[in-house]
Image (tube, rainbow, N blue to C red; front, side, top):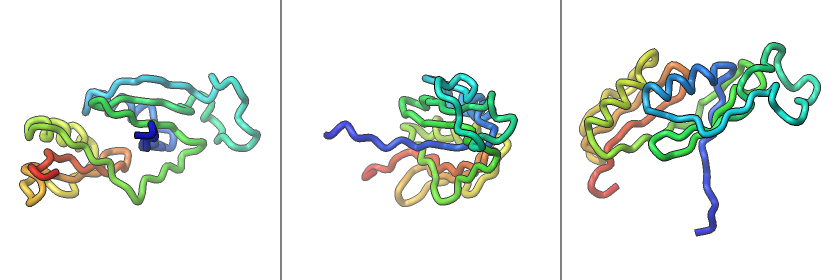
Amino acid sequence: MTGTTITPYLFFGGRCDEAIAFYGKALGATVEFLMRFEESPDPTPEGMLQAGFEKKVMHATVVVKGVRLMMADGCNDGANSDGFHLALSVPTEAEAREAFDGLTDGGRVLMALTKTFWSPCFGMLKDQFGIEWMVMVPGESS
């Protein structure tokens, strides 16, 4: 083991505070660190930050069920999360249903929770921020 990690970094186009509160409610996420652009020890380069984003989240680290996610508002309101999903694996079907229901609030179901050949309980959704999730209970061979 080299100590190398890969951590998802999500951008919310000005809605990071709202996302942190939502994931806190839906998944029990806790804030480990949060810094706003106006709190940065170095000034933001001229023209990089959209007007009105001074109080927005420059960087946050949250912990969801022991896993770190990094989050930010980005420098403007153009968040884009195409091309990936977050996979949330939990030990029980009850936990899967609770997480799925919480994340679906304000979002939409892409695939309802169901038994598959790889999982006793698997579903997909897009949350209210456009982040796509796969919620599952690992199968015996996972």
